[in-house]
Image 1 (tube, rainbow, N blue to C red):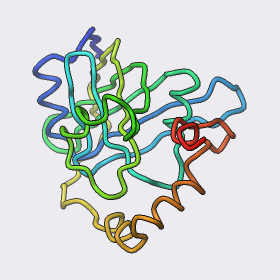
Image 2: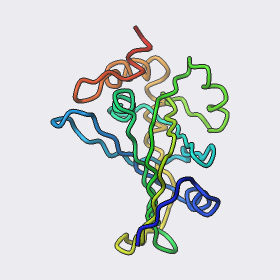
Image 3: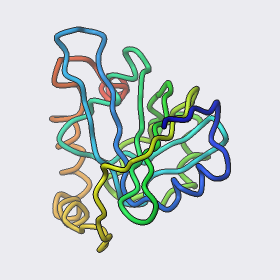
Length: 185
């Protein structure tokens, strides 16, 4: 049975901190636009307060969440328990992108172990929290983080990462601008 909360309580925060993976979902306003759902890992999620969370976002093949939250703010973050007691947790909120040249970057960045391919931090103000049973979620054993992204970023180097980001992360697949794209103009 689903339960709803107005904020992240201590029990929910503890559950979040134990998870190794989370999923971020966002969508454009256009009915023909693409809904995005992305898995995230690398110890990149932080609970900032009862109603605010953030995650370190790394350079990847797209930048959909950033574009969607710039357009309409909507974001949902989901955690599933793959070990121990079953549980699904959804955080519903309004998201925004914080870039390295933004005033709040320094305060946010010190909460993470930034890596060379960190492109932005996504902050979400949470207005509804939902838990549900998770009985249908299978059990998996956590074996560790993959190292392919870190090796890829190291091989690209600073200039290669900037070039990749500029080629692949300035607009969404639907052509929406990202804050990153706006910051380069």
